[in-house]
Structure formats: C-alpha cells, structure tokens
View 1 (cartoon, each protein chain N blue to C red):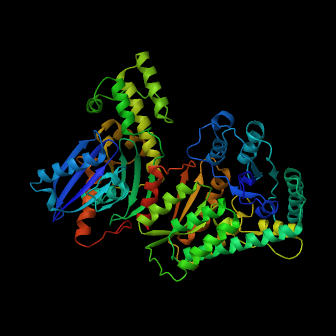
View 2 (spheres, rainbow over the protein chains, first blue to last red):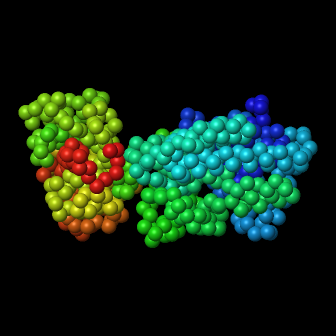
View 3 (cartoon, chains in turn cyan, orange):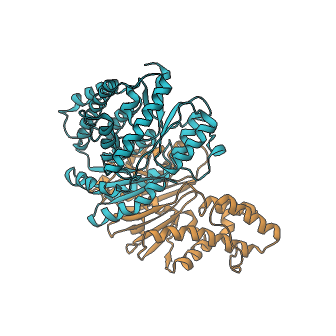
Length: 342
Length: 267
C-alpha cells in the first residue's frame, strides 16, 4: 500500500473498517520521542503528554490525521491541527457518551457523515460490499489478537512479545498483522507456562509502547509477567467482533459502543467487574493503574478504581507518568518496590 | 562468609561489608566520574578495610538510583527495601523510614520482618533534597558540612516556596540581597525541605519508630523541621547515609545462606 494512503488517528474508537474500505491504511498515532518540542508554542501546558507528543510528531508538516472526539485535550489538539498543521484530512468523529439505542442510532448517523467525508476526500463512492470485506478483515485481526491475549493470560508468552505484536497490529495493514500475529500464536500455543512468580494487570491511560516495554521488562526482570493490558495499546481494540450480517454501519456503531468501556465513557465502572473476573480467573497478583499527567478521565477514575479493588485485597500501584518515552527512574523504582511488596 | 551491599546514589556511593551477619567495614565515597568505576573502587576499598580481598566476596547486592551500574552486583534491590532492612538492623523497633538523599526522597512503612507495607517516592523534582541544600550552601558561601553546623534558630519569618527548587533558589537569593539574617533564611530553607519530606511521610501513615536516613539526615535543622511538622519523634541513627547499604548487605547475607528475605525481586 502506498505511503499516501496511510492516515493517523488518535483513539481506539476510530472505526477502522470504514477507513480501510476506502483503501486507506489507518495507523495509531503515538507521537515521537525525537520530534522537536513545538507543542508548548501552540498548546496550553495543562494538556496531556500524549496530545503534546502527537503535535510534536506532526511538526507542522503534512501529517494526515483523523480524530475521534474522545476528550477535551484531543478536541483542542484538533483545533490546533486545523490551524497550524494540516487540515486536509482533519475530521472529528463525534462519540456518544452513552450506548443505548438512541446513542447507537446517533453514532450510526455520524459514521454515515464520516463516509460522506471520505467519499469526497478519496473521490471514491462508498461500496457496501467492500465495507463488509473490511469488517471481516478486521474481525480476523481481532481474533488473532484475542488468541495472542489468551496465551499471555496463561503466562505462556512474555508481556514484551505481546506488546510488540500489538504495536505491529496498530501500525501495519491488518492483513499483514493478522498473519504475523497468527504465526506467532501457533508457534507458542503449546509452550509451557513461564512459571512467573507474579502476574500483573496493567490498566489506565495511554502510554508510549517504549514506556510500556520498559514497564514489562522491569516486571520480567523481577519475576513478574504483565498478563493483561487494559489499555489503548491493546485490549480496547479487539473485543467484540463487529457483526457481519445486517446493516454494517449499525453493526459497527453497536460493536464499538458495546465494547468494555474506557474511562472516557460514563459507564466505565462496568468494566471493573470484568477486570475483577480476569484477576480471579487468571491468578493476577497485583494491578498497576497508570495515569497520564493531566489525563482528567483516568485521574478522575483512579479513585473509584481503587475503591472497587481495595476491599478485595488486590494490591494496586498508582503510577503517574508524563507520556515519557523513556520511563523515569522514579517510576521504575515505584514499580520495583511494588513488586517487592507482593 | 563475606558479602557486600552497595548503595549507589546520585552523588555518593556507600558500601557496607558484612561477615557472618556482622558489619565489618564501610566506605562512603562521593562520585567523581563514571559510576561503574567508582563503585568498583569503593567496593575494593571497603573490602581492604575489612582486611580481606575482593575475591573473598561471596555475594553483592546493589541499590540506589545507579544500582544497575554496579557490575559486581549479583542482584539489585530498591532503596526502599534496603532502607527497611537497614533500619531494622540499626533499630529493631523501627517501622517507618524516611530517606532524603541528594536527588530523591522516599518514605516506607514496613513490618517487623522488613517487608514493605506502603511506600511513597518523590516525582522527578529536586525540591526538598540534598542538591537543593548544596545550592543553598553555595549561595551562603559555605560547605554543605558547615551549613549543617550554622545556627538555624531564626524566626519563622522567611517562607521559601515549596513548589520548585529553581524558584526556591531565587527566593533565597532575594533574601540574601535583602540582608536577611542567615539563621532566618536557613530556618525557612529547612522548613521548606521538611514540608516536602513530611508530605511524603504522611502518605504512608507512619508508625513509630520513625527513622530518618540518607545524607540529609545529618542536617539537624531539617530533622528538627520534620519533627515539628509531623509531630513525631524522628530518630537519626549513627551514619544515617549508610543504612541503605547495610540493608543491601543484609539481603546479600541471607541470599548466601539460601534464606531469601520476605521480598520479591530477582532471585
């Protein structure tokens, strides 16, 4: 696929199959560690590090990026993007905060608007049969990633391998990523358990893959495997499948809004019992709850998260970072000390 | 059975050598140059002080912010855990430790076995740490050791910002230019450091006995400020900067006996 079909996006609620059906190759924008720091010129200091890293990576150049209306920081980034970076592709997909029939109907309408925008930008007419193919392509991608997650939950693979394959899945064409993930899964299906001393669940705000890898490596060096990632780097993408029958837009709206929610959604506490079940069924010994500095959504949720899990006697480490690509020493010390406490 | 604990901090390396569980030699060495080479030298010096040679060392545990640069280490441990074991060694009734070092500050509560129960670590910020005191000393044109000896019994009139070391530094400059008495400025500086440290200690719900360790514990003004702000008795052991290295040596001693202590970490 040629370079000019690659298009960045900011949130796991971006309907990837719609972009794919127009011949685009969506990739999750993660920002860059080495980009010039231009963000303080255009954004207020109290925007989160992810927002700043995205703008820094664009550096005023042509960086086609589409947005989901997921939080205040990202809306302000969208404003700045249109004014100072590149407004050729900037589009804000509205995202409802509820998931009842009314919200699904509203979201279906927003997806139809997105399709009109893409028809105009790509000069291609919407083709429903092509969208159905894209839905199937992404469902295969989801199934491969869920199989990868199952191996991780069983402690058969290292968290670092899981993260590398998730990262690949978020930046590569789905067909290619599915094949690579499936090959890795079949290679490791019959692997013995790693016998990790501790199993950890990592939940919370967005973080760069590099930082997540340092956390995973630090845990591994201390005998612990992070066996579940409730983050935007991984699990939010691959459950549930999008329905392959009936009205495809309604199926996409319903599947995306019906997935285990992130802190952005008001029904986010509904995922706590799901996480609790993962903790119980997979012998998880402790939880690392990561918050990004100035990420109001997860910082706000942190208290109810702790209030839910504390009485159940599950140790929780609250780890705050600044979207550092290189994890600061203090954060590493906190993690190591937490592992020593278990 | 000779073992060593190496606490490689950001400005000083501390080494404790133990034989059969007894402390036999120590070294405190400011870091000048590459940490790996400095740690090796400090370790050799400490072993020589114990009348032995480096080949006699059976096990080495390193800790501190530069712990990964100690090449001789068989394993690493966090400063929090080492401070907990070190505190119990110097005072068996200790249950809380606060460590104010050159660049970081941490507090830990632990049980009678030394296992961490709760802990708090400062963010990436130098306020309320030794580096800040070094800066103040240079503004007062005295050494850090002499700064600790200067009277700080001034009035509670000078308030130093507790938000940022850089801003706090400019506030001290302003007070110096104003001709404010040194003991008043120092009182303000120590209150500021104590405020940062006490905020951290409160987060771990301190239980007595509370020990203060790390280089800054040698400064009586800071300790007095901490006592006043926490309303707790703060005990400063002899050579407080060595407590972490002693804790690391204790972990090494138990590893040698094949009796791992109640902690996770590399085993």
